[in-house]
Length: 171
Image 1 (cartoon, rainbow, N blue to C red):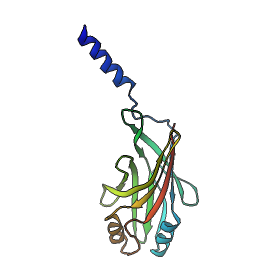
Image 2 (cartoon, one colour):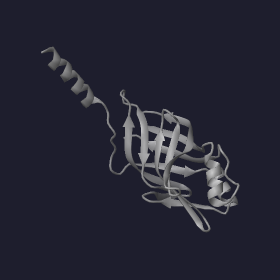
Image 3 (cartoon, one colour):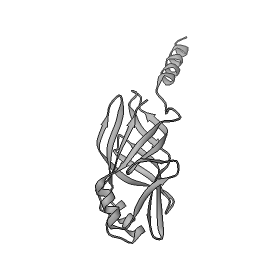
Image 4 (cartoon, one colour):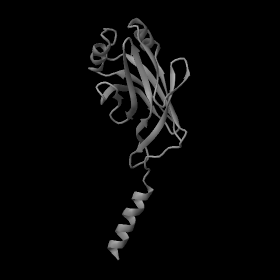
């Protein structure tokens, strides 16, 4: 009897825990900062939507939310997004897609089209989480700037460059 009660409590607790969930049409906004746009212009590079992302305004992209992970107390732990941005410079393009924003570690990773691997590309600063939204600023993380400079044969990217702001309205 006691085992059934404990098992029932454990199963009930597991069923009550929030799981990754989201509405089908949820999106997060990613806005490239003016300093990043200036950096791209100096390097004669452009940025455009990639994959499932859409352009909604000047330098603002909507990325579909594919998953939201919660911790045991129901706080947002991670947000996963489809699509991303494409940085282009003759003759090279680099897609940065499938953003994963990890709130506890304050880092964001992306899937880079070259070398086709997931990289920790951004540090997340000015992270604000409320019951209604998650916002933050993405800085190019240490080491990522040299990868981007090598990729595009340029010198314009620097570690810590404010690349973008993101905002996600919680369901």
